[in-house]
Amino acid sequence: MGRGFGPSSTEIIMATVSPITSVVDGIPRVTWADIVTGDTITSLPVPGRKLTPASVQIGGTFGGATVKLQVSNDNTTFYDLKDTSGTTVSATSGAIFELSSSAAYFKPSLTSGSANAVDITLILRG
Image (cartoon, rainbow, N blue to C red):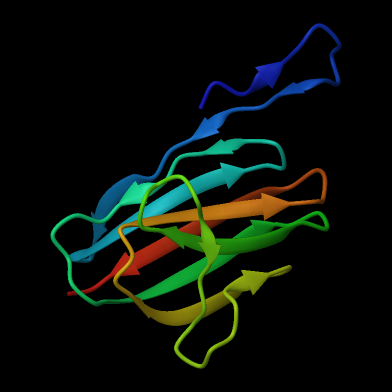
């Protein structure tokens, strides 16, 4: 991830966090790991999918941060995603959401907070 310290021993250098795809117990998943406030977060393109049922689990150390899952069809303008009950996918502590989307790109966003390290795991079905 390339995180480290700048000229001051307390200045943390922000990182670019990209989605990592893996298969655990036969289930494909995408994880953005150890996101901190100020990181650049890379989106996940979802090619060749129609309506995608999914779940997202948000966990880690929040340190006052708010985490949202956002979607886009042009990979430029992102909007807050809503779960299957119409609630914005947003958390200030550990949570899991069920969702369905046909958007072309998924990307978490992290605002506020300090001393955080948040993990987002997305399971796409379909």
